[in-house]
Length: 421
Ligand SMILES: CC(=O)N[C@H]1[C@@H](OP(=O)(O)OP(=O)(O)OC[C@H]2O[C@@H](n3ccc(=O)[nH]c3=O)[C@H](O)[C@@H]2O)O[C@H](CO)[C@@H](O)[C@@H]1O
Ligand SMILES: C=C(OP(=O)(O)O)C(=O)O
Image (cartoon, rainbow, N blue to C red):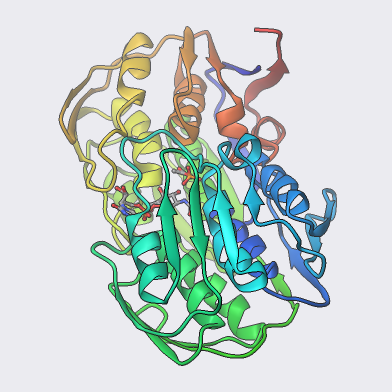
C-alpha cells in the first residue's frame, strides 16, 4: 500500500516540470494498436501507474512494448496483436482500458471487455461508446460483467453523443478512422487532449476534420501506420502545481511547452493568484490572502471536473465562503469528509458544496478515494499544521508522475512510502 506523508508549512519555490498528459497518452496507446506494422514512438510519456497498466494490457493482447522510463518514451509494435480479451485483472485497474476496443475490433474483428476501471466518481456509463459501435455496424453483447463487441468491418454513419464524452469521442473517432465511408460525430468532446489524439491519428493517415468544433467528420481509410508523436503537457498536473504555489504563499515556474491553463488560471486569478508568462514558462505566485470563489464544472472549455477537488482545498484556505457545483459526475465529493477531518468546513448537498474558509488545517490520517481527491489531500497537507498521512496513495500515482520528488525539489516536506498496510 502506498502512503504519502506531508509536513506542512513550507512555501514552494522553484521550477516545476509538468508531465505529459495522462488523458492524452492513454488514447494514444490505444491508437498505436491500430497500426498493423511498424513501431510507434510516443515521447513525453508520463511515468504514471495508468501508463504501466496500459503497457501490461497491450502486452496481454500480444503487442510488443518498451517503456523507457528515464527517456519518458514508449515504443509500441502492434504487429502481433492476437488476443481480443482485455483481462479483468488489468482492465479494471484503469479507465483507459476502454480505449483498446477500437483497435481490437479493427485488427481482430472482436473485443472482449472483461471490465473497465477508473476513479470511482458515481455513475460512469459507456452507453455512448456501445451505441456508436452499433451504429457503425458492430454487434454488442452486454453481459453482466463482460462485454463482447464483434464486427466483420465497420461502416461510417452519423453518430450523436448526448453529452460530449471524452473517451467516447476518442473511441468513436478511432472506430470510424478505419470504417468504410464517412462518419459524422455530433456533440463531440472539445478537450485539448482529444485534439492531440486527432493530431496523432492524422499523422497515422486518418482523415479527420472538425476537431474542436463539436462536429467531427471522419473519412475512413484502408490502413493506418506507425508514427512518432510527442504527448501534450498535462494541464491537470500543471493546475495542481499552480495551486501548490498559491496555497503555500510560494512562487513556482511551470515548464511545459504550450501550456494553457484556461479557466483554471482565471479562477485562481480571481482568488488573488498572480500569473506571468515569460515565453514558454508560466510563473505563478501568491503573496496575499486568497479570496473565495464560485466554480461550476463543465466540459471543455469549462472548469475541468478533474481540478474540482484540488480547488476545494484551495477554497478551504480562502477567506470567506466558496460555492462549488459539480456537473459532470454524480459522486465526486468524497474529498469533503477527508478535508473536514483536517479542520475544513465543507458542506455537501447533492451536486453542490459550500466551503467556509478560512479554517486552519491540521495534519491527520486521511484517505484518497480517487486520484484527484488524493492530490487535493496532498495540497491540504502542504498548508496544514503538522503531518498529514494520505493512504491509498496508489490512486495518486495513477495520474501524477514522481510527485514526491517533484514537490521536494520545490521545498515541500513530502515522502512516499510503501507499507504492508
Ligand atoms: C481517461 C480519461 O480521459 N478520463 C477522463 C475522461 O473520462 P471519461 O471519458 O470516462 O468521461 P466522460 O466524458 O465519458 O464522462 C462524463 C460524463 O458523461 C457520462 N457518460 C459518458 C459516456 C457514456 O457513454 N455515457 C454517459 O452517460 C458519464 O457517466 C459522466 O457522468 O473525461 C472525464 C471528464 O472530463 C475526466 O474526468 C477523466 O479524467
Ligand atoms: C477521473 C479521472 O481519471 P479516469 O477517467 O482515468 O478514472 C481523473 O483523471 O481524474
